[in-house]
Length: 65
Image (cartoon, rainbow, N blue to C red):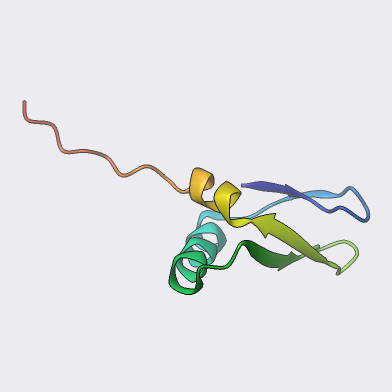
């Protein structure tokens, strides 16, 4: 998942593990934004919970073939 810092406009990527951890926290606490730290300027970046839900990997459905 790619995130852009609002302060320095640096674009960085959250790994699948970070995205999964963020999704778990969002689901458990019902927060509207997840905070991540920009690796360039060290400011907090708010990532909307809805964007994290959209970025979750799809579960493969078992085929009946």
